[in-house]
Image (cartoon, rainbow, N blue to C red; front, side):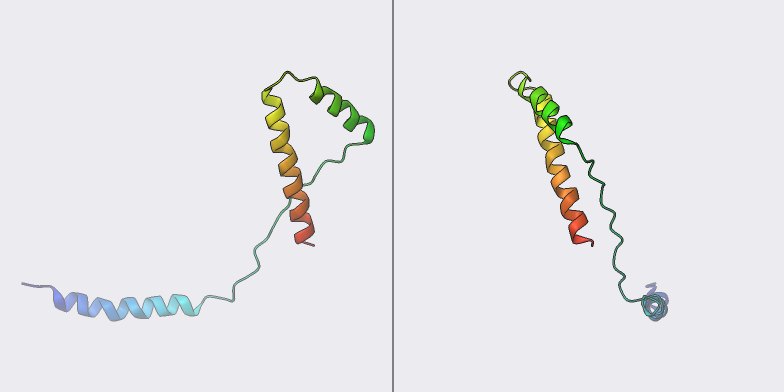
Amino acid sequence: MPRTGCSKQALPLLVIAMLSLSACATAPSRPSVVCLTVAAYDRAFQARLADEIQRLPPGAALEQAMLDYARLRVQARACAVQTR
């Protein structure tokens, strides 16, 4: 025996429940954005860092990590400018 009667009764209840839930929705809110703080390095530290990077052996893993870090610093600065 088919159970069509049960599903026919459940469908209107499901529609009412969905409409009730969507009626409670508020206007979309602006998402909260948190930007990373970029550390400031003085000229002396930057010169020391540049010297150490230049002395790295060719193909050093630290070189790639520093390039990745530089990219993250650029992105963090861009984030800070966009959220002002």
